[in-house]
Image (tube, rainbow over all chains, first blue to last red; front, side, top):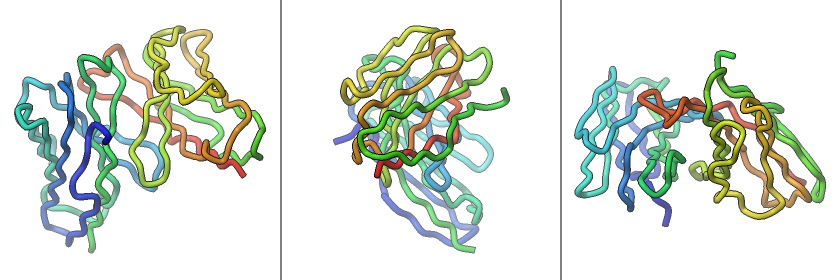
Length: 112
Length: 115
């Protein structure tokens, strides 16, 4: 199966609630990134966490990384309808160089 | 330019035809990447350029796919004898060396439909 698998595949919440998405990967990584994609077109970089970091914040986003479990989570607090999108984790690693390996994504729907 | 520009945004072609997809990266970004994304899937790596040379082309699915970046800026992805299975969104990204803390900047993609 593909490196970088997101869980859940789809998530539907109400505006104001928190959304948590998880990502697992298989091989050693240098960095893990989260991207957002609207309507199946361009991806927007959200946040990058390095393999020696455990947690990172950016606005309403919080990312954690557990290299022992090869997993990461993305938390969006106080969600808004405009957060509705697909979210992908992507890793680059020691054997893959700077190319990114993406998971299959989580489709988040925030209902107003 | 301010962002990564991809043209055309949509391309419909007949099976067996040749297509070219263009990517204009952010000025000064030395690294350029091509990815392909099928419906409901995550992007899959195709090829990576560092400057003018292809540093990693291991993701190209077969010899019908080829990409160039002759002057280290604009890149063209070329697909010969297109097949219906080639239908996908083709994404281009650029970065400064190694991506850095700002990640990779993606274009809006070219949606290729082979009929």
